[in-house]
Amino acid sequence: MSRPEPTIVGKVDASPTKRFFIAVLIKDIDLIDAIVELVDNSVDGAKAASQDSSLAQFRIEVDFDAEGFSISDNASGISIYDAENYAFRFGRAFDAPSVPGSVGEFGVGMKRALFKLGREFEVESSTTSEQFLVAVDVESWQADGDEAKDWHFPMLEKGENPDPTSTGTTIRVKRLYPYALEELSNPTTTTRLITILRQAHEEALGSGLEIIVNKYPLQARATTLLSSGSIQPISYTEELEIDGKPVKVSLIAGIGERALADSGWYVYCNGRQIERAEQSERTGWQTAVIEGEKRTPKAHWQYARFRGYLFFESRYPDVLPWNTTKTGLDVEAPAYRRVRVEMNVAMREVLKFLNELDEEGKEGSISTAISSASHTVLGNITPSRTFVFTAAQVPPSPAPKEVPISFKCDPVRYEEVREALGASSRRQVGEMLFEYYRAAEGLDG
Image 1 (cartoon, rainbow, N blue to C red):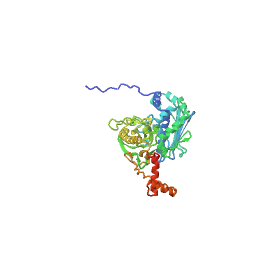
Image 2 (cartoon, rainbow, N blue to C red):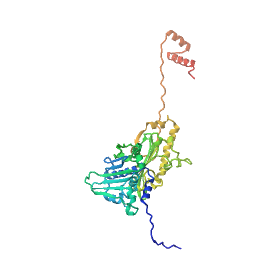
Image 3 (cartoon, rainbow, N blue to C red):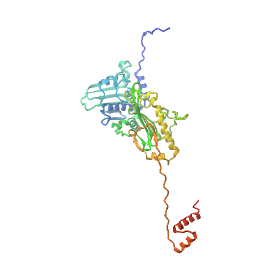
Image 4 (tube, rainbow, N blue to C red):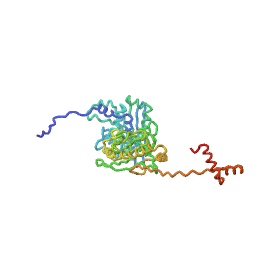
């Protein structure tokens, strides 16, 4: 017997409170990671404004001290329409415009960072034709109420841009929270942020983007693997389709310098590094079956040369395998699950080579090949579906050359010795005397 359709007789309020929403939003993100998300947005702005693959004309500046925090860029800015309808929404609206190949995807990065940092913030942006200023006192905004109409941020200024050559976005945060003030006042925070940004945006820096942290410009560092005529890393690209959306995946695996802290898998989504030197079960260590009951070993010193790289690229960021903070893999994402087996195969081949290196010792052909290999930028590695090592043919050692021995003596004494030895020539006399001495001194063993 079917139940009748229920009749709606009223509604209950299930909307979140601002205080609770903010607490949940910022709870699980590190302060440095929140700042990196703001840089992500500026990188997306530079990519959107670029006419080609070069980002050399764009600059991002991050500054912070006890007085506050700021980040500014000279990209194309945010339009008033996008600001009023999309940029400040909590979560990305279905009809929100997107930048193909962007890093920002979930629509929470900027707001999460601003709420994480301080009690007051303002966002000022200029396009070639217009500009606006949004300013928020967080405590006053929370106190305004939790009705839907009260979730808007106040726009204090908007209008034409009097200088079309000056575009970009500037964010300022004041009245920092005590924990943010303490961390941003620590000199090591600058060093840590520089390191993370250099790694996270290695590709953008390599394309010419300028990122400056507290007046310190970041330098691009090319990623390399060892290769030669004897050693060929794995390097190939394939196209996947996830929910009807194309995803390009590049897998590169091989060996580098011996450094355990740098060994493991590196994963990038649209140029943004989300995993660095990952050595856990999440990337196949100590889990994947290799032969019979054998399993991929735990990362340790013997595998300190292993390097694996995964690059996911798509016009549709929602199908990429990253978490919402872009600090790690979403291991359940279909795009990642599709390449797990290939990762394990690649890792097996490289680890087999490293096992052979360990068994051979320091003087064998593998060590010789490694020492003579050169650092090759990932983009210049010759495509290959397998890891190839070809031992060099070592020519046989030439026979040692004989050493001539000569001396002069009295002819009378020479004849006495020659007759005593029964030798027929001066050469034979010399050879017999040499062997006689070796035997007398026990040099024949």
